[in-house]
Structure formats: structure tokens, C-alpha cells
Image (cartoon, rainbow, N blue to C red; front, top):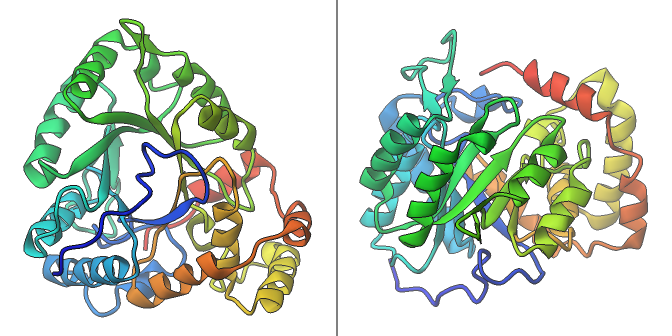
Length: 336
């Protein structure tokens, strides 16, 4: 692989717009996921070898397209391992990409789609220490950002001073520390996280949260985090496929018509329009594509060419769902 020119924007340092598109490996590191139609994306094979080959193909396409931010997690099956193998096999310099991973969930499906439980959440110090070592084995020398995976008020991780101390130790050694959010109380959780300090130093450098046209309720909190100096990463901008052509639900048709109006105006696909809306947030550093195929990635990349404007902004204000309903719907999505 040719030696790259380092990206002029390091999203964890330079907080100024424009935001950039990154790649998340949630749908590439394991055979099953909750995205609509994920089974169609893996029809060519779900073996470890087949999934590894697909992950490499999408990572190659992302690299060629200029994507320089990649997100994975301990619970993404073999996502970390695939990414580490790709980085080493392509001889990518450590400073050429920004690599983020997460701890707090353990993958338990054993490469089965029909598993009773796909992942187990545990934000204890013991899990942090174990998963840090596992992440280092996969991504050592490349990791830039280590995040609490789906921090919530209920998990107790924001009250665990032993975990905070260990994260502060990792931060002092050179790894940036972040948290990801989920659920209808993202904003409340983020407010508490912003106040956390260890020895007078703010613990978190970045926050990754769900924001999309159906669930924008955390926007004010994310904007406040940006003003406070945190990098803000948007995940699930396509609402697990609900903001794509795959969503044929009757309850979505009125919203779909509005999206199709924008898509027709910009001569773009629904997914590109939804991602363009996320990229237009002035407080966002990175917007993650969750593409599971090269074709999806190329469709997503069209978002960066859409000239988002006030007319588009006015139209999307009619698309939001009640946050509680949104998260209930997400919880009912089937692994496929």
C-alpha cells in the first residue's frame, strides 16, 4: 500500500468543521447484526474467513476513498482482530489513521446468528483490565481512542472511581479516553460524564452518540460537549437501516416521502441524504458509516457531495420520532 499523506484533520484534536466520514465495523466483525437486511449483505458467506475477506474489501475501499477514522469494539466479534490484521498486512503507518475501540461488552454469540445472547455488558474494573489487554494484542501501536461502550447511568460506570482511576492511567500514558451513549437518556448521561475529573483533569476526550433524523434528541448536549472541547462522533446515522431504501414499514411511509423529496432534489439515495444531515451538524467531528459492503460504502460516500442548506434543514425537522418510541423500536430489531 502506498504511503499516505496524513489527514489534515485529526478529529480528536481539531474540533472545527467540516466533519468527516468514518467507518464503523459493527456489521463487519461478526456474522449477525441488527441492521435491516444485514443477512442480504452476508449472503456470500458468514464464515470467519468470508467475513474477514469482506471486512478487508470494505476497509480497502474506505482507505482508497480517503476515510481515515475507523471504529471498532471488543464486542464486534472479530472486528478488532480483522482491523489489526488489515493494518499490518497493508503496512499502514500508525499515524495515518485514527483508530477507536471500546470496552464493556463481551461477545458471547460464538459466531452464531441464532444465539440467545450476542453480548454481555459489564463495566467493572476487571473487564476493563482484561479487555484492554485484548485490545492491545489486536491493535497495539495503532489505538488512539478507548471508549466505555454504551455508558449509562444504570451501569454505574460513571460512579466507579476505580474504573475512573484506571482510565486516567491509560490517558496519562497517551491513549485518549471516551464514552459511547445509547438510549433515551443520552443527554443526561453525557451531562454527568462531562463533570468527571481525576486529579483535576477531565476524564473524557470524546463522546460517541446516536444522532439521526429519527432521533436527534441529544443534539443540545452534544453541542455543549463540542463547546467543552470534546470530539463528538455520530453513530447510527442511518438508524440501523431504517433511514434507507430497505425500510418498507407502513409506519415509515410519511417520513420516507419527505426523505425522497430531498433525495430527488439532491439526486442522491436516502442513505446519502441521512448521512449528509449528520455531516451538516456543526458540532460533529466524525460521522460513522456502518457499511457492510463496498456498494453501501460508495453510496454512503455520496453524502459528502450533498450541499446541505436551510431548505433541507427545515424539511428534516418533521422527521423526528419520540425518543422513547425510537429506542423501543431499536430494541425490537432482530439479529440477522
